[in-house]
Length: 387
Image: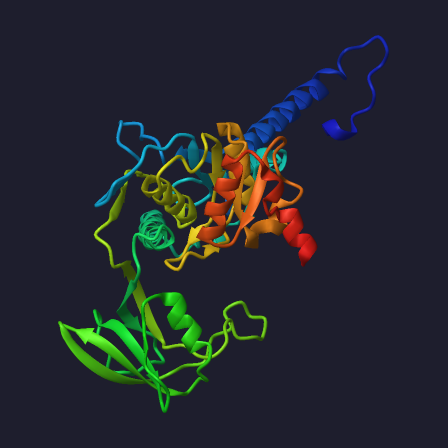
């Protein structure tokens, strides 16, 4: 018997030697097609442990939601109509639980300058379920809205004091403080008593007090004045650069804040999570409480976390958010100063980007844009040049 692979070549006039190789060719072709089909199926269905960030939708916080509700409703004070747009921007994320990423999706992302591929652990670690990821995102959104209200009321002059309440103690702190205690004053050993009216004031005092100092906190507990002694802690090095993140010392307390005002704000926005809309929420509240039109009718988008003392912080997906804003028709964008290195070189054509590090700077930037003379805007290019 002759093996097909070593069969002699057929004679010019005969056909006997052609039939067996043809069957093998068909078998090999079928196997090849099956292999290609298998690769296609795998490329389209097998999940990959990566996350794709793409431009997401935007919402004008001065407008209505899809069901006709105002996205932002301020109560407890006179409000003023606002034209123009203050757009919060989002990133569409694929690759977290419930939203798998495939190889073909990765190829598409690699070929699209407005999409980015990052490690999944940076966004949604394997240890978290889909429900836990959503819950964390919603908790961050709620926290950012609460901070936006406090920051906006302080910025607009509608509140004069932050009421700082103990929400918990760090693992290193053992002082006899209780959840719900309201901070009223601080007295360093041998020093003078200072009334606490804002978080920045408290932080400024602590920056002058060495770690390990005994201080007396005056608190209100269940309507009664109580003095509690506390030993301050050393600031941490959370970014790992070998230096403390702040000067002086820390109280070692988790604090919540609210403004001493009856003014409140509600947000009608669902299915969106994360902290990055805080700065735009705060701007929307300031606009509602301020006579006249803060934006001057301009379409302004932006992003950035907000703290209750008005600090605007860095966010992820800045390139995708700028692209989404451009697609929505925004000509201007407010970016956190700490994101400037990612902004330069990736600004959509025709868009002007202002760098802001505080809510006050953001308000000033919007007013400058409204004046239609943007020569005084602080840009990311100028920030990086200064560094």
